[in-house]
Structures are given as C-alpha cells and as structure tokens.
Image 1 (cartoon, rainbow, N blue to C red):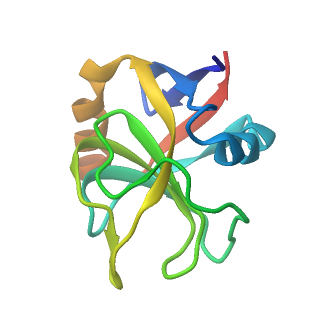
Image 2 (image 1 turned 30 degrees about the horizontal axis):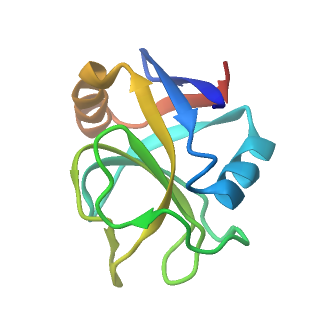
Length: 137
C-alpha cells in the first residue's frame, strides 16, 4: 500500500493510492508527486472540490471509474468531453460537467481525517481556493 500525506488548506489527511483497482492512474499520479496546486469548488457535481488541468489530457483509460465517489475519494477525469481534473468528494457527488454526467477513476482514498472533509469543502465554498499538496508519506 502506497501511503500519502495530503495537506489541503489548514487540514492534513492520510491517504492511500488504490494501486490494485486503478494501476495505470496511480502510476500516472505517482510520477507527478509531489503535486501542488489549488482546490476550487466544483460547479455542477455537488459537494466536491477539484484541481482543474485545463486543456491538458492524460493517456489513461477507465479503471475503477465512478460518477458517485464517496466522501474522501479522489477521482481523475483524464480529459475528453470536459477538461481533465482531479475531484475530491467531501459529501454527496454526482460527477458532471456542462456536457452531462461523467465518470472518473477512483485512485486515492483518505484513510484518516474524514471528520475534516466537510470543513474543508465549506472553506473552499465560502472562502475561495485553498492550497493543496499531495505527497508520499
């Protein structure tokens, strides 16, 4: 199991890469670590925050994909119909874009710190973008 440390705004979380369920996605993300960006609130999907990648796309197919990630699950949408992104669910999510429902690859699960997710999501919603760093533990 590959353990991760995630710092988002003032909060810290422990997580793991879902290497068995999403090996290609995890390999792609592991090569990008440490990943530093900002979390912004989703526009269509519900209680989630995301890291947009704009026109960048990733050459990875569907694996362990879902439109309804559970709180604490990170999914990667590699690009195509909508822009590439990483989404973190902090509550109920129906992963969508202006083009309609999407599916993303569930590749990270938070293992410690779930009780801080709603606070993080509300902070991003009401105070704006928050720094995020995903790194190996």
